[in-house]
Length: 229
Image (cartoon, rainbow, N blue to C red):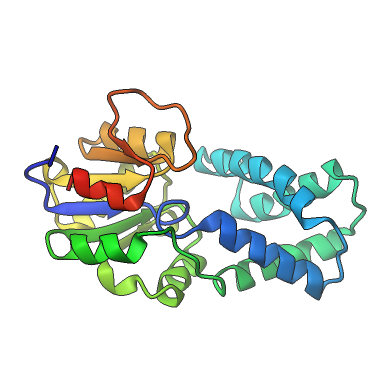
């Protein structure tokens, strides 16, 4: 059923438009090769991905800073896969991960098509918890910057989703009212509950098939957003 009265659509970036997991895996393959780290990449990633998600949760909750997140997620993973690597190498990997991550620019299937379609009907915006120095490069290199009127990141806002301050900051920047705005993202806590808390309508991009409340609108493919907007 089409939703009426929406003028502004806010997207999350990582895991919603920009295929973070795929780009991250390619980045690790590259930096492991550069630094001659002969760890099994598949095994490393299977351990790293839940660790990374947990550290991002701590980062959203202001329980860990950016520097610690970047180091600890790697340190913990190497420890769990029993691969011996020096702190010096971990710090180099951490730095190169950020440098090379934005050189891979795979988007989720349907991203360009849905942005082209929505651009004809709505003002489009980004709200992201990602690091400021990386997010704009991702959008530029993936050639999607031109679709968005505003970009709000957590470092500029001073808080992270789901804090209502970042959503209100984004609304002010976009000159949008909550009742005429939609938030689309993959993270139930940060994107969906955070946006609902300030009065935005929401759609969960549930490509990972996580459990979500039945009353939450959700899609598993970006082009399915056309059912609602």
